Amino acid sequence: MEVELKTAPVDKRFSNTNQARHCYAFYNAYHQCLHDNDGDTSACFDLKRHYASLCPTKWVESWDEQRENGTYAGPVPGEKKAEAHAH
Image (cartoon, rainbow, N blue to C red; front, side, top):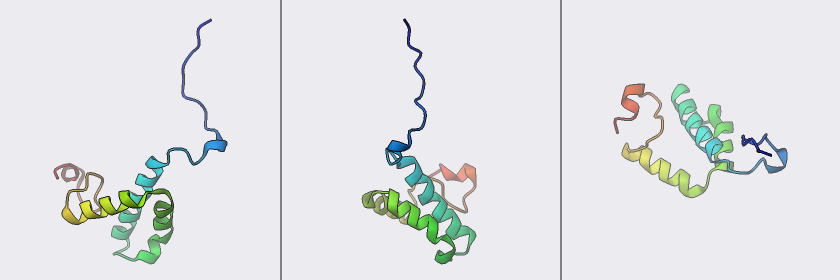
């Protein structure tokens, strides 16, 4: 008997397993929100709360430092797509 391999369905018992993708998405969404709202942190509070609860502090510190240095590999609000990977 052959077993067909495929991705397992979502199992709510393991909802906290590997949240790295969600962490990264919320972190980037927060910075996009700040850009879209002229730096108004109150408009973006929920996004910050989400990434802060999911992301390891070391990751956030590293990404913040990379943003300050202009070396962040992720999306940077205000950059055109062609510029996004020119860093």
